[in-house]
Amino acid sequence: MSTWHPNDGKGQYGGRDVVGYEGKPPHPKWPNGAKVALNFVLNYEEGAENCLLHGDMESEKLLSEMVGAGALEGQRHANMESLYDYGSRAGFWRLHDLLKTVPVTVYGVGMAMERNPAACRAMVQAGWEVASHGYRWWDYQNVDEATEREHIRRTVQIHKDLIGVRPVGMYQGKPNINTRKYVVEEGGFLYDSDAYDDDLPYWNTDYGSKPHLIIPYTLSENDMKFASPNGFSHGGEFSRYLKDSLKYLVEEGQRGAPKMMTVGLHCRLVGRPGRAAGLAEFLEYAKSFGDDVWICRRDEIAKHWYKNHYPEGYGRAPNVDHVGSGMRSNI
Image (cartoon, rainbow, N blue to C red):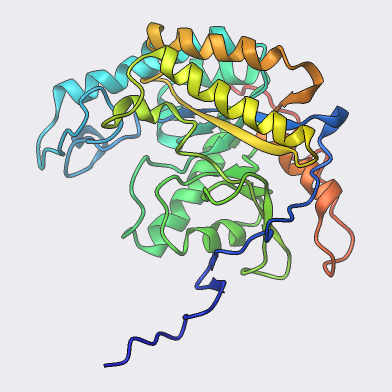
């Protein structure tokens, strides 16, 4: 029996690209000669997770203090609900206090944002970018096209209503192979982050007549490892890992190959005081590098990439300087 497959020997196939920059990435030309573009992402999800009170058929099971918890079909999970509520009631405000003078990108889930207008107002007042994290904190693997498209439209409108401006970035988080197509066809996003495959942004040309920017996210430099087996056990471990990552990337940049680093955060996880202490320690470490580390929002990275690295063959790069500006709370 033959073991041959039509995709054998291909580096790009079915939306995958295992080759990328072929070991020769572009010099990103970060502002002020920075060696690393560092972005903090705060996931705001609490109140949009699976719950019978939200019309779902089962309880949430992911990313809580109860590692390995299973979903309860047709039942509410009192402890899971309470653990999520901690994120929006307490964790968010602790992280807001820590990061309110720092450029941050929020991945805001539409349903969660609607439930907590005060948090939305605080995001705006801090000057944070609020990117879309979809309408629900669902696994969209088997969600039908009509529902997913409607969720994208609905969450864009929620941003307009609560933040005062539409989102320019999208991270569905648990997408399917068609999610990017829907995002591009919506027409208003500068970038999406449903990728983990590089240390720099890159362009995708699979959909439409214009290139679409991908700014990869991370599940590595991410506090979700506090809620996974053999992950971080305390804030010191989290801080040490982030410091090691940043130091290594700065040294790469000093050798002529600057990169990007993302730190993923969740209100209900790193919002706990002992873990927040580790984040605070890393933040001070990152600031100690001065101009070598550009702490920035993802929309700033996107605009920089449009201006400096727009691909050839697609005409002049669009002027995106003012896209997403003018945030104001309509609350």
